[in-house]
Length: 187
Image (cartoon, rainbow, N blue to C red; front, top):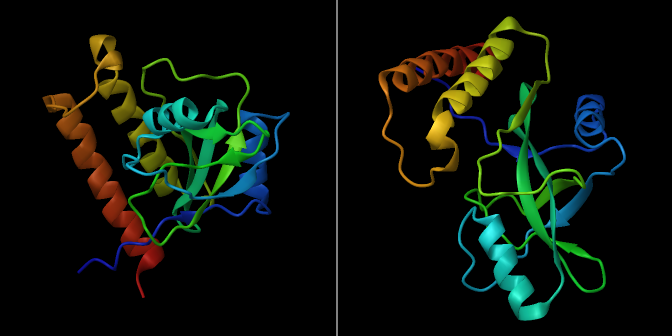
């Protein structure tokens, strides 16, 4: 029997590993906490469209960057490319609701060098502990992203029909994930 799934959480901006991740991504920027303030009729996890809607209604600008999570608390963190609204006074607002309603704020790292151009951008993952199993899982997730965004798939949005290669990578990832759960979250 597998242990309960660990709940992702907002990363801690005082953690040395999270600080190092932020420095690697955008060395001239400071990560900040932003409350999640969904706009009316916001679409779950659709930050680019949600920010465009609020700019159209209230003005301001898009601020690209990374929301940083401990997706596997104490084991692995991820920086996920994200857009927030910069109001006319320069204040940042996360206007996009999340699937995980227990999370009320994000750690956001502005990135002045990257913009969203319609292509998927892979998460940047780091191990929070030194373990070959975690490194293998990170490599597997990177491999799956590369395979799912190869060639014409890089511009595809919508339901994905897995190829045999994708199924094999996903199966391996599932097995690695099960082992991580057993090793690090077993009571």
